[in-house]
Image 1 (cartoon, rainbow, N blue to C red):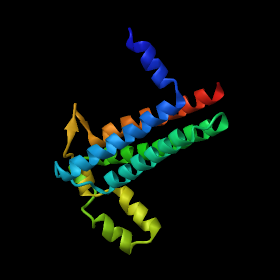
Image 2 (image 1 turned 180 degrees about the horizontal axis):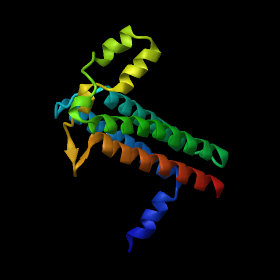
Image 3 (image 1 turned 90 degrees about the horizontal axis):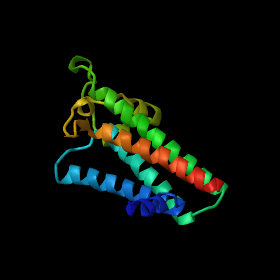
Image 4 (image 1 turned 45 degrees about the vertical axis):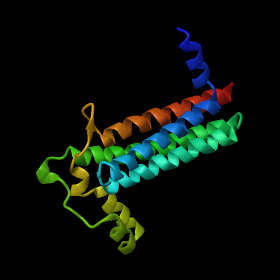
Length: 173
């Protein structure tokens, strides 16, 4: 019971909550790099876009922490956090969908990210990336029965909704 006042004071302070959100995003990216360089799990195209969303979300949390704005500024940061997390959630949902397709319906293998980015116009590049590839459909990592995109979806939901609620609530007071 001694932890409850500490925990509530930690979570109900907008600036500390934004710092925790930034640290969570930093931890997610640190694990992604660990998985890539130590566990040798190469990211697919959809993984790369999820990483971009985690980095963007972390930067919004960091800006909100550093700025520590009052009233409407906090609300703006909360909405930005929610929107970036929603974008990351959309990519994670697409990745989960591709991973759960039957093998005969999985997208074919395609060229790598660098080739697509260098040789396709932006509109075709985005369509190709979000279609996914055979690499995106392969499950190479699970923890507690959930794949990496499923875990990222959970994190995006917690961070996006949490950032919105905490920044909006604290701004209203």
